Image (cartoon, rainbow, N blue to C red; front, side):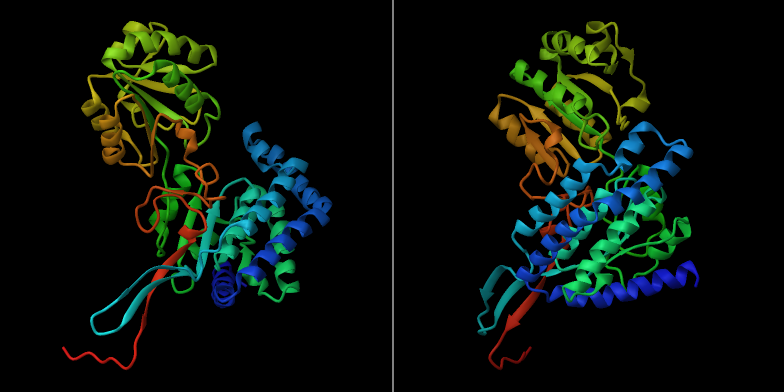
Length: 419
C-alpha cells in the first residue's frame, strides 16, 4: 500500500474516531487518561527498550548531544509523561460549556456552545514526550489526532502510540483516535497536509525550516510560530536590580527555547548604569553580547551587531543589545523585528506599562516579568500543545480551550423568518 493511500486511510479513520470522542463524557475521558498513565508505567521497560533503538541510530547518524538529550526517555521523562496525563485529567473540560447566551426580540434564545475542532494533525521533531502530551490534550478536548514525529524518534513514538491505542480500545473507544504516522519519508508529511477533507487543523512544532515547509505545502489551516525573537525593554526609571534579574533569567536559564530573550533594548537614560552592571554578569555566564554603537561605548568587550542580528533567533547564549532613545523607539524596533511571540517591559511607570501592553504586538506581553513565562503551564493552562503566533484562531499558548471552537445554538418555539 502506498504512503498516500495509508495516510488517507488514517485520516478517514481519525475522522470516524473524532465523532466518538466529541460525544465522550468528561468522566470517561478522564478515566482513559489515567489508564494510559498507568499503562505507561506497566510498559516502561518496553518503551525504554524501543527508545534505545532510536538512541543507537541517532548516535550512528551523528546527532548532537542536545538532540540526543531531547530524544532520551529516562525514568524521569517517563514519570513526567505519566504526571502530565494525570494533570490533564484533572483540568476542567471545555467541551459543552456555553460561553454566552442572549434572547432575541422574537423569542429565540441564542448561545455559543464550545465543541472540539475534530481531527488535529501534529508534525514535530525529536521529543517523544510530545507524543503523549499531544495525545492527552487532544483526547481531553474531544479530538482525534494524527502524530507525525521526527524520524529519529519513530520506534519510541510507535511504542507509545500502541500503548495509548490499546488502552483506548480496552476502554471502549476507537484506538484510531490517536495514530502515529509510520513513515519517515517526507512524502508522508506532504500526504498528511493534503487531507483537508478529514483533518481540521495542522500544528507544526520544530525549527523554522520545518514550519515554513508545512505552511507552504498545507491545504489545511496551520497554527504556527516561525520563531521567537523576544525582547526585553528596560524603561527610563526602571528598577535596575529587578531588570537585571529579569534579563538574566530570560537569556541564561534556558537559551535554546522559543521564549528566551534574544534582544535587549535599554532606554538611553539608564544605559550607562544598567549595561555596565548587567553586561559583565551576562558575559561571565557565557553570553556573547552583540551591541549597537552606543552599547559598544559602554561595553567595549561586546561584538559589534550587524543588521542580521536584530531579527535573529539565536537559541543560544548570544544576545543582541541596543540602546534606544525612548519607548517610541523601543516599540518601533519591536514592530520591525519582533516575531509576535513574547515581549516584556521593565518599568516603574504605570502609563508606559499600559501603553506597552496595548501596543507591543505579541501573543504574550509582560510587565516586570521574564519572557520565560510564555508557557501554558506557567500561565495556568495546565498544559499546552504549542504556542501560536497566528491570530486565527488562537494566539499564544494553546491549551485545552484552544483545541476547541464554538458554534451557535438557537432554541426556538416555532419562530419563522418573515423578512
